[in-house]
Amino acid sequence: MFAVIKAAGKQYKVAAGDKITLSTVAGAAGDKVTFGEVLMLTKDGATSFGAPAISGASVVGEILEQTRGPKVISFKKRRRQNSKRKRGHRQDLTIVEIKEIHA
Image (cartoon, rainbow, N blue to C red; front, side):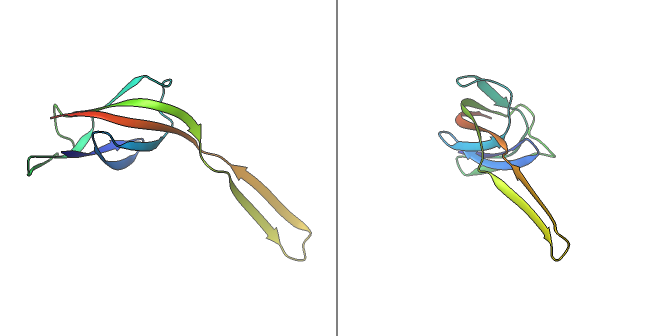
């Protein structure tokens, strides 16, 4: 059994026991998170699609960790102008383990 959920503006294919990395979700480690926007659900070979979401379906997960992604460097240099700019960015991330899928 797996589902396609929409979380933080992106779509994820999840099954029970999966660990997914999302953009920041409010909560601390150990908190339960419910994703109510289930776009597709498969169970015992039967597939159901939502328009846009399946009513009554939800996915429950547990926050494992609040972390940050790798540093991304943006460096711009204009040749012969003595002009350069260096900026760094680290995205805040949340690691969530999917516990169960309610149909």
